[in-house]
Image (cartoon, rainbow over all chains, first blue to last red; front, top):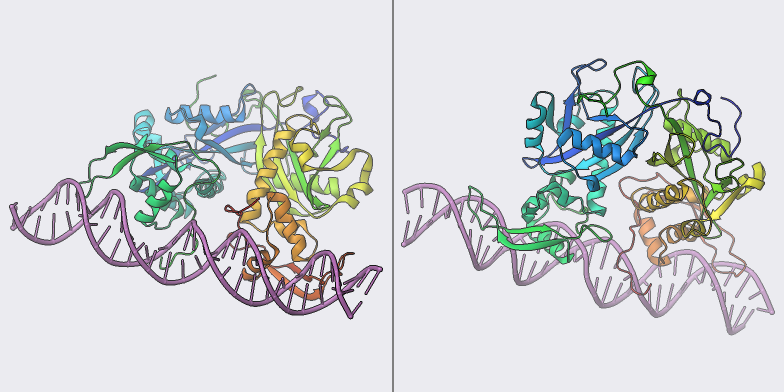
Length: 250
Length: 250
DNA sequence: CGTGTTCTTGTCGCCATGACTGTAACCATA
DNA sequence: TATGGTTACAGTCATGGCGACAAGAACACG
């Protein structure tokens, strides 16, 4: 490469031909809970390369918007959900061969929201689907480009995010039972949590969840109707549930 | 914006004028321990904009290299240290106004290494310096562009990295005492750790540190000569020391 | 030889946490 | 209506991690 001085953290010239030009895109990994398991929203590619293969939604960053705004726009276009606060950036990907046609650097964003099944079916059910995360991670479903790595990183991120922040409530509805919330932790971490201990830990962290005073309908199998909660202030400094490290059997 | 289909996660056309072009740079936040405090390596800008102001080193990503390779190259050029394994990507920054001249998207990398004071002085002491992290975070030292935010994010990242991975040993030399290692945790987290409990936790996680059998020279004030260790296998799944949450006094 | 300093081992108490048991409140049958 | 099945929730207990502190060991210095 050309000689460089140590203060060239940004270009000083105005001639675009003096430095390499890249396309910058934003890819959004949309995670949701469906039937007790973690799912990721995928779209099917219509053109080459990787035609017909599954991929995560994304698009170009515009020169007039921030990365966060671009991710937010992609999320709205894809699901109709406008949830800027739930967008978390988790990685950048710029390998030269990651796109066979040109140099593309993409920024990975993570979006966590409650079941978007209805939304997906409504917009364009033919080429969009919720895929169980396991089938993606184990290679059963092949993804275009380096999207498998991107999804891997996103899942790793949400795992730690669940412990240090309050993302858990983003997976469920505006009101929820503690069993639903517990399912989130169990699905994302792949562990079993005792219901009684879980409740204690949650209500101990005062302000995390707020009882509505109402109760949900019991399931078809019966059972005591569970208490309904709504999300309180998201978090203060570390989540209410820590990832278990010393479990006995499982 | 123009109409979009849902499978345009990457461009399908080959005409570069069809999509916005960006310059992509890599900025490296180099953190190190110096005199018991966390420091960051800064360089002084020679040209406008922000001429004469402090900034973090960085440079263009080449089309033929990965982001990681670009960061590694920057680290080598800046300090002469070639430590690819210590480079961690922690964020991407692409606000339209972040560079007044053009659209620049930068990828932030974090490098942790032991005292680079000698290296810095050797290369170009005039416009490179180690700055205490506190003076940067509290605004005493003004940084160019959005570099303050980048440094903030890097520090936040190294704080959690210290807990989940084994970065701590990267701050010290190839052989070190447990007191030195403890200083790293205390400086980064801003807490006090009991030396006795610290030693127990470290040696309990078998393989983390390996005793060399030798002892270091006591300081000027005397004291029992401390045992010398070297870094073992970096980590398995979570670091040996967890960030304290329930401390008494401080 | 004392004194001060640092490293290192020992001990103790609290409490977070995992595991388990029991009870309450609902549904489904007979 | 009784009975069993299921879920929600309270209560109890034991273990262990962790913070606090005390004491002993090994050095420098006067």
